[in-house]
Image (cartoon, rainbow, N blue to C red; front, side, top):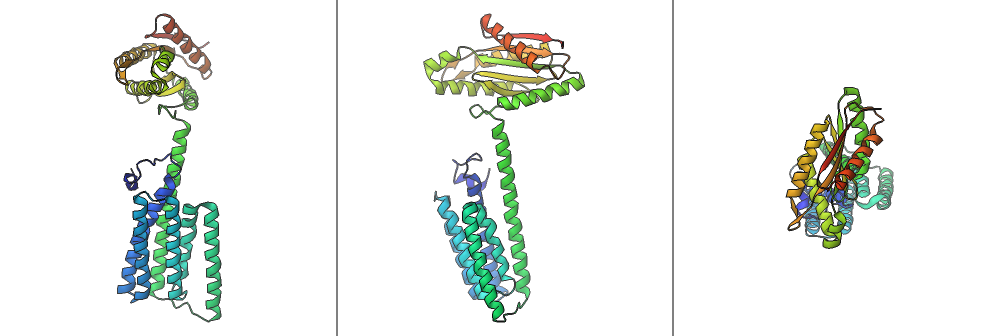
Length: 351
């Protein structure tokens, strides 16, 4: 878990503010480290107390903004405060250095931070205005005949900017990857129960059957439905009904193997895909699920049961999906017609 989550436990990876908040804290920590280190170097190594003064101002402002956001401050305000601090310190540094020793390199730090924190519109305006100003300032220096005056400071400026850019874009790449992974997870996950959704199950079943066809392995599916689920909703309310479904999914995940796929098929129906599983194994799994579901109490004493229809192909072809699901569905209704709280299974051969 990210260190800043202790300040904002309500913001998770699915929250649209997640990346912005993570970036604010990362940028502030980089600012604290850089302003502190560079300020000390300017005093001890370069005898530039005037520049160090602004470095320490930047350090103080960065710490203040950090405290502001960690105590619940507005993230938008904090983003603009970060940009204002960077621009003020940058302008002061470049003017004191009179553009020498590659001091203008620090201007390249502003666009990525501005775009990350302020978005496309704000980032464009801030970056454009800053670059326009420094272009004009550099033109004035050229007219005055100011020389480059390269020294050890030029080397330090180059190294400092380069490493800061690496840290910043490394964070961006990590943030982008986390956002992509979260999007992938969201696209295949049922939001209520946390198990796979119908889209994932459709694709998973195709892959499992294709692999089983090549390896000559059996495949089983279990389609299960919560008995009298409408009665639960009517008597206890839909929130309790949701708790029942969540509890059921926990049982399913505990009862199945890591290689099995558990997902919500629709409403109170759930599908378990079991690769390399014959009819006897599928039936045993169904009995285990029924027993564990029956024993588990939900929301202070509510007990539920499930009816399960299982279907197995011992010799699979890749066109077996519809038939496999249809047989499992028929068996589930047979289980309900026979009194519920049981499993009905069938082994099939390809036609």
